[in-house]
Image (cartoon, rainbow, N blue to C red; front, side, top):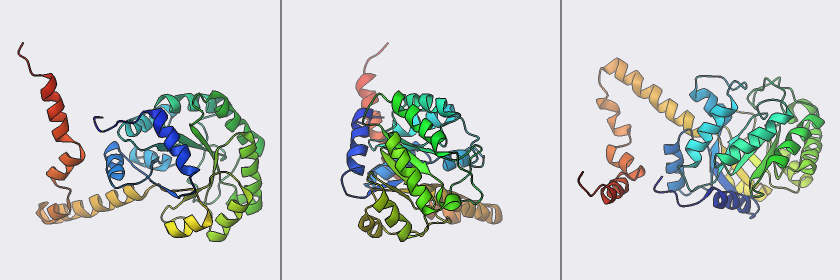
Length: 297
């Protein structure tokens, strides 16, 4: 907390200014407030809070089982820990179009800078899996309009995600995106694009900021930041990268501990106590505490 000096309003403006700046915004996913702190220190432009990661962290598949309260709470925990603006995944808005209104209220109250709302049919699934279904365009338009009506801070970015590429084709997905922009969406998240040509077509068809999802093991080619900048993409997310790296390391280390009977062999791979305390600003908290509790009772 002591490291956070920016207000939620300032972070929302920074996010909106960033995606409209013409410079690609790099927004990795953080599965915890501590990871968000690390990403801020490394100089990234924002923090992404993935619905798939939140579900996985709860031991659940990404099929819409999480609730608005769970997502809003986790979003708040991460957003309050960093000066970077946070973009959060709110799936389909947690219910009927009316629920998008409450979702907007909750995310704004919890200090988030932006969210993306998708056009899948409930129960939804990961955007890079097959056999997804999307709602009619008019249903998604109602979801967006409800969120726009609920928004208090005009700098809060409402992003519309379309999953229609794999079911209806590229042109239909672009047509949906145009309708979503007309309904009030500030940015578009075209999910499960295949390659550069897909993004190029979206860029030509849409005149608002566009997000690229660079998730591993998915349907999209993993493009470089230079490629994305040249395509005119405004924002890139790496949604599950930090969780995959962490879980890979944990799994490997505990296999060794199980087999060798000690963690001695994996200690060199660990973050040190000193580095953790540095990341947590432990010394600053100690100084702050001492400055307050400097009396006797």
